[in-house]
Length: 251
Image 1: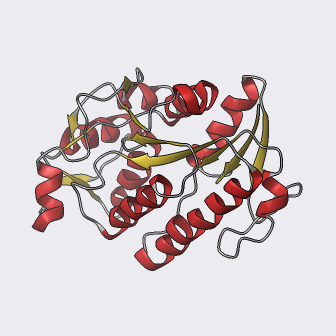
Image 2: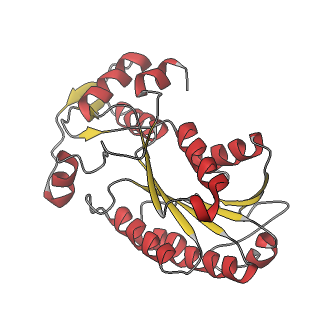
């Protein structure tokens, strides 16, 4: 198949591209800096040429924490991408999203809800793949806090997943095609663990001297986190690599 991947240089996108290529598919990596298929989702420039004769498009784009910037890329840019797909006759749009975005109402997650609605309403056959937090994300978050000498001791649960396993799920969805793919599916990590437990595992693996301290979880976001809003015990697909296993592997 010929598959275009938007966001192919990111944490998820780079792994999705590698997995699709490993399976023998032709991948077009879409980005502003691409030598072969330069595109700009903020303007739509380059999309028509990049999507010509593509069988599927994977949208793995990501944006910064600012809701305004995120909306410009993930909602408005997604709309431009979908309109170009419709014009090019693309048969399947696969959108990478996040488990629990409607239950933990951060500004960024609200934008992701809007993005899913944009995909669902565009008229292009689609599959939304929701994933839990990547192991890489926790590693980065714990590392940032450890640099100021602290780690969170919070009972709220998470279910982190290996991004390579998410890439495998995305590739399976692409290969299943529009006729056999579900409109929405989910992929999660093998274990539901508290942030405190995950932080302790990170501290041991990284040899950190950071002090574990309680973090307040307030408001609707805090309530959603405490209630397991970012986990999915009934997910369609469960990964195998735990956070500790990922750390031990030297990722």
